[in-house]
Length: 322
Image (cartoon, rainbow, N blue to C red; front, side, top):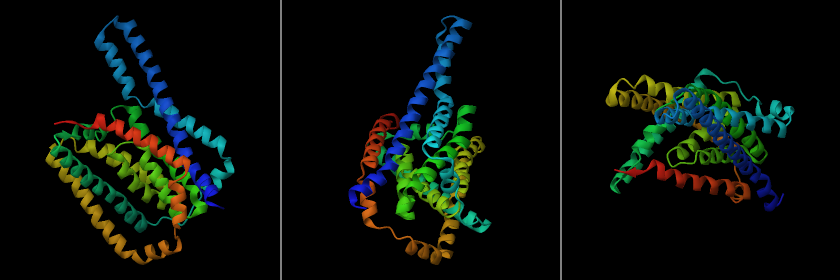
């Protein structure tokens, strides 16, 4: 296969991510507008022209996750129609070696260590912005405040981990797997990170995407879903709720305590498993040609440009004057 053919083959991953992202955006916007109109009409019928009631209906529609439910359903239906049931059974749900308790806790520690790096990254970025008279703390607090509706709780904690893993570690990673495990894991993690479209979540999503990609390739996509749910449901929502009554200092001590313990566990795991890690790396060499062709493919470039534009636009909402 020459480089032109290779770029075309690898670019399918980028086109897949782009199409799914566009489907999600359209479904979310259409559903939110429909909910808003229905809610505002109900408010008008009940209270007449009451500005507060109408705005409350609009805000309720904006915080609803039903658009994401619709987009997930539509996206999965399209993916199922594209790839036959046999592909899903033999490739996406393909099982690897069994997950033992020791391996799970070691992988979980490495996975949670990405949260530690994320916290350091956000602190460093905030300090840099403060030096320029700017802040992103309000945007960060809004993103990490947990779900503000039951539908959003269900989506973020359960449905999003399933659908995102099916797309990125299932379809996309399996599409790239014939060209090697490393490029498949790197490619799916890169697209997963870019899909988040903002300067706060993209680096973190890329890091956890690497861990999720490894887990999906070596164990199964089901275990990747479990880790993804732990991140979204436990760390992203439940822990925030449990520490909300402790004050800033108490919450910080609990969260940083968990993260530091995770980092120690990750270091111990990596030292103990260094020979296995080295053997896996040598046995799954990644040729530079595959890397160059992946990142220079039309699908990946187009998706990256769209997400970079989204990231720049999001910066105006996240970053505000002090």
